[in-house]
Length: 430
Image 1 (cartoon, helix red, strand yellow):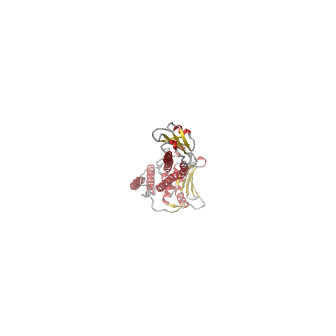
Image 2 (spheres, helix red, strand yellow; image 1 turned 90 degrees about the horizontal axis):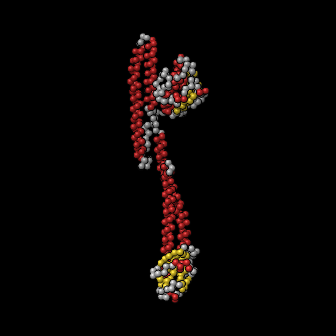
Image 3 (spheres, one colour; image 1 turned 90 degrees about the vertical axis):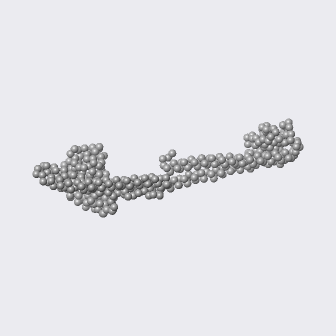
């Protein structure tokens, strides 16, 4: 059986229709033959009665009778010899005719006979079904093909109607599936419509909507928790920074300030991630990617150059604008640049590209990375195998969430000559 519900429905209907057509044809054939035999036997009885009436008590005085087409009449005496015959000679019928004290119907091939005792002898009447003039049998033979021509189209129409009904049901299921496909982190308020699916499938839609309600509540709780924790940590972190700034030992002060700055950055990323995972009600504003990239590169350039790396900006000649959220896009680009600076050795060249179209890319020519690390780059909380690598491991997760929020995607591929990496954000342009 096919896996498709529509295919199973059609296959079942075809099998049932074929079985019904065969059963109907067989039943009609049996009924017609039974009816034809009934009329034929009545005809044989009448012919025997007419022959007996014309013969009188003594079969030897029988008078000629008028026979219908394909019929023969024989009178047999008490010595079981044929005394008179009318119509075609059928010795094979007379040889098998039962001659006793009761009337009998019998058959030999296509010839049906009837023997009845009359006086001191018998009258045997026979009818050849194959005779061209036998109308009853001709009607039976001609009716069945015509009946089949009517029955088979009807039998074929039954699965067709069933397929149309099944397709109508599957179309409604596809419509509900299309609605379900639009449900995501940014459209958690969408629910499957009620009353569109068949009654048997309605509980599935209700259960799905209930699961979506629980999922939406869990996401809101998670986002609110992350935001609350980040807000609560800001104040004590500011106090720690003031205390660290008052430490007299320069080495200790620098180490403490670096740790505080790292913690502050993790808190900022947590806040950003919580904000991104929260459904956004408005459609955003028009953002110029060229201007955004220029601002981020200008802000990050001093620190990049001070670390012994270089950074450059490449802009396409065509405009690059998207409808979205400038703060989130800025955070995503900052994470990509910081990620490139953090995971490449001094002397690496970092190139930021904006356009053509709604594209932002950050590439570098750093050392090649193993394939095992390459496939895990976008895993949340994964920071690579290096012991000296700093970071929280959620930077690329934030970038990917920002790309999804703008109906785009983040892709990663190796740079020219298999050196370095290129992170590309393809967004939904205006």
